[in-house]
Image 1 (cartoon, each protein chain N blue to C red):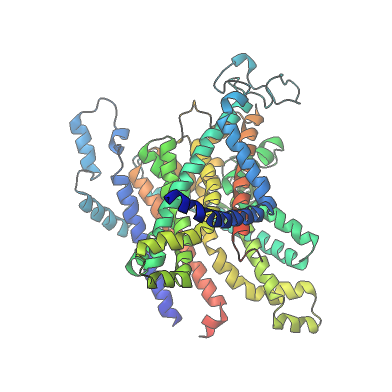
Image 2 (cartoon, each protein chain N blue to C red):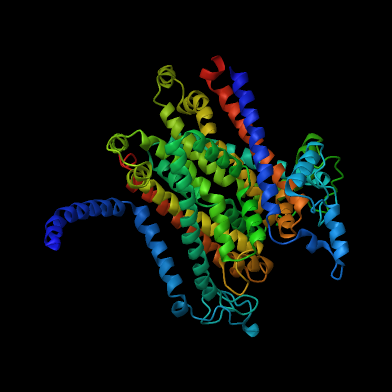
Length: 302
Length: 335
């Protein structure tokens, strides 16, 4: 009986949301940035997941007799090592492929954590105003007076090197990016008719914040999270470069860059390959975030 | 009216700096891992360790430590670096000029580059030229200083080695300068050989720091200029027969600088933060590269001094920008 009732209601609700979804998908697909940059990010995820099967060699396998082989196409290149080898004879392409794992794990987890922290504080500051806003705003200002790189190195040095520390460091530092924007957005939304209506209907403050305002700021949030992923990839690379990220036997782009820097005159490709990967990944996350903002923001669609 | 707003801004800046001091103090004190343990020889007795802790005041309650530390700073006593065994204030004094010169040159490059491209973009607006500028600028907006710095190392330092890869000056160039502002002093005293050498060492780090800031300036200034070009006073000047370039660079620019500065202000502070990693990459002897070593060595007094200097720089830059924006705004100036 109950099922029958639900079934009767379901089609209308479903078809409306399907219609909305289609419109959203269409809006996203008309943004070339979303298509190309999004495609690249999906490719990275696939590479990270399938690293073990895609990589031509074991990323840790050393062969000192095959050290500093140049990439294919240069004189002295050996078949099977498309991007050459490093000074220990490890395959650069395989290390690059495995490096996507750390980069993406940090990108997704750190961006999500930073977003959660910043969104909560931004929502509270923007909606409750008063003392809450003063405290949050002052915290943001104090936080922004720290050089982010210095603060992240400080946090990782205190917690000990490792992916977990890197993720925590990024969340601790970059929550301000979310808090600043979400605070302003929430202030604007709090004046909107639907919030006033919800208040008149007697909704609780938390219900208004999380069920009414949050969905309406979600597009902005999504774009910010995507941009933050690019930033997180960079911060991880910086910390790997300084030697504070994962242990040295896990391949990371930043670690490869630091190692390549030591032997840059003998084997520039060890430095160039991860740098190119970093460049493309940051660009992709940035363009995807920009594209999402344009596609989802009704004001920008004009 | 302006004076009171300015005073309020300064008081806020002091409050922020105080907050920075508290955060850095607490962050380092709650840290696991003992800085003293790092500096003692293996085999030291527990009595030796306790003596050392007492010497650096690490055996007192937190609040007492904080009051002693803050009191010392107010008297110009930043303590003694644990890893370098030298007065922190002296170390900062030696390194800060290099970072200031780098940051100032980078800002100048960013403003000049950003301004020129924004004006050029407005000149060719609604054409393929503008679309090209926007596309290239999209790239500049996305790529951070760290990546630019590494790309310059590879391209201009190794593959096509035209610029020195590290340091601040070539040992073969006899500097013998009396201040640590190598570039400014050598230019002012007319020693252009030294100036050229210092500048050559500065180009790559300064450009890496400047490009992200230039990108933001281009985007915001170009939009402000385009809006300005349809204002009445610009139309009036156009009727009078002014050339397009003079309309943009003269009339529209004058009214776009203030709003652009207000919107890009925070980016100038990002540039200062960027010196930390960029100096490291080019082994440039400023406070940024020193900061990374200080953290890795857990050199508490040095870290505290460095973070305070960085915090003060951030706040000072913000203050300068606020004052400049206010003085450029005719409504505030005459209000």
